[in-house]
Image (cartoon, rainbow, N blue to C red; front, top):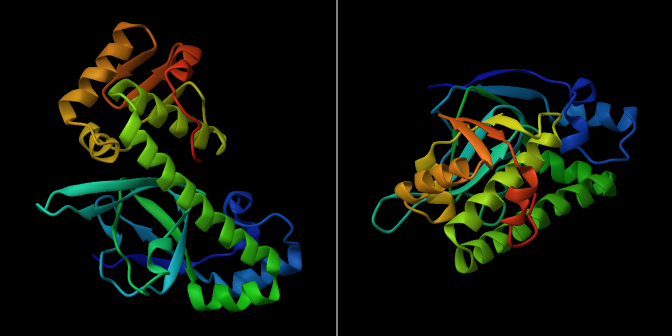
Length: 239
């Protein structure tokens, strides 16, 4: 399915503080508008990009959720991350000029297209933008290191607690509730990301519910005891 595209202006976007560098004045933002010229609508279940596709752009997520994944040796999907509004996706393609994973919309979404060659040109003119891109790349490295520690040293309860607390923090930074949210991803996808079987994820959710830490109604999650959940977190979260 062909994604719908339309014009966009970063200078009028209410998410610019999340995905654009601090220090850009109005004139700088207008120059960025000339680079980030289009927005794409991606339907739930559709690919934004896929493994092996030529890398041309970074994407700033305006609305919706995405998952990135790769195929394991036996052909199964291995989820490598979940991305939400205000975050940049597509950094995997910078190294070899090809994307190394699939990016799929978990719900209807919109992304701003940021042609990378134009971003590089603008970065040379505005060091603050270059620093911001480096910061985003560094954050991804830290996140990957955190996942390695999570998968290697934590129990199922600790892994799921880390995941939920991290998700809450990221949603709160976008003005959403700290106590209630909807999981856009399935329990199977969470399990793939955390290195847990589906049954283990479901059992751990049930345990949290039985202990009164959370209330679960299908994908609707309500945090009843945030301190108890945080106590299960073994190491700092990577945002």
